[in-house]
Length: 223
Length: 223
DNA sequence: GTCTATACCCTGATAGAC
DNA sequence: GTCTATCAGGGTATAGAC
Image (cartoon, rainbow over all chains, first blue to last red; front, side, top):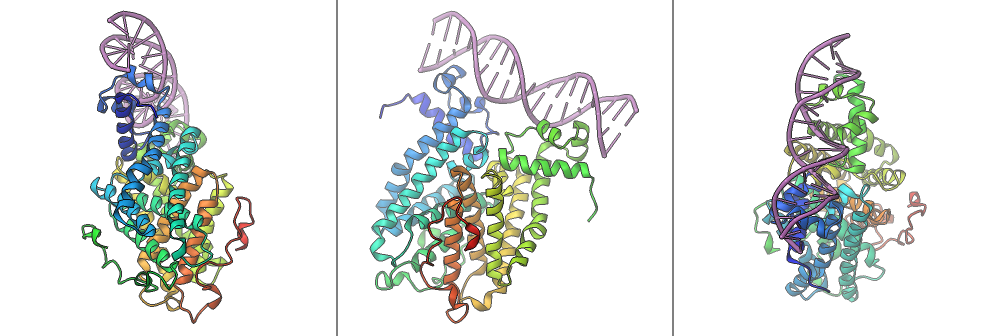
């Protein structure tokens, strides 16, 4: 994988941030160029058009899934299912640290451009595919501890979709509550898919002692 | 509730459709005016600015939740939980009928404009709040048949977030599979929250005979 | 409420020297 | 690869008659 110019990197990084926060249509190439300290000549040297920058943003986000999301998550837990929750927590951290401005880089672009920009849609699709497949592979690792007959691909899709939606709603609500509810629900769901004879402490069937009524500034790292 | 002009209605309807499909930034007021057969004079007679049209779109979508989504859903089933799934099915129908162009009217605008257009964010928030509260009230109706200790508001948030996300992903994938996975997951989830002594046919714990590996054109109305 | 005409700016994109 | 200068067009919004 060739090392690409730092200017190009800066443009992609800047655009990742601005598109996520403001959307594609609300972000002008001028703004991107200024913040990235690049000029028009550089921009169009690297990208034929604005759309191609959006595609590059998604490509890089997809590449970053392994290095910046799933690999770090793997280091926080041994249990594959817990690693899934570490991934969800990663997005929660981003959301809160950005004061509810940053959701999923792909979700935002996909929602806005799926119909009008086929290239962007294709790249967003890849992002979702990789996300789902990585989650599925974590479920595969945990297969022995799950009840029989679990469609792991389907569950992975559920997790990914729930995450995406929760991030959109959380940004609109300016609150982590939707995400906490979603994560809590998924935790219960996966807990219920655990075989009764393993990880017994994880399956007090319906509701765990309930993340004690999470508030936005609650110490959410503790559960 | 005063009867408002048909021109205004046309503008809102047209914008609802175009914003949902193309996003806000990709839709010009000219395009809206042309399709709605209105002129600039009319447009700015009703709306101080484009943003206010987006707000009106969300307001109308929120009003429409009761009349166009939850009320029809109530007519398809007696069981409150089944009514929730009728709501999800409503969105699935829209999605498929539009060839995967139409997701949630609010999700699209919220994702794109939450940061830059506070008024839009507030209206999107209302849309989500109403959706969540209506689902919660259906869960309340079903409370007797649910296991004790279910945080119904949290479950309602989960359902709404999962729906929103599944629609975004489904549009990017041009496939109903993500939505089917999400709905299937929610069905299993709610099935597991059912008391064992009621609706026994709904709770064969982990996986139902599995919606027989749904394909995009499968007869999805049958399960 | 609706119409036409138009202001005016900012947008994405290009040209061509260095 | 980067720079400055610039274009052509479409964008939102306004003015004022009817």
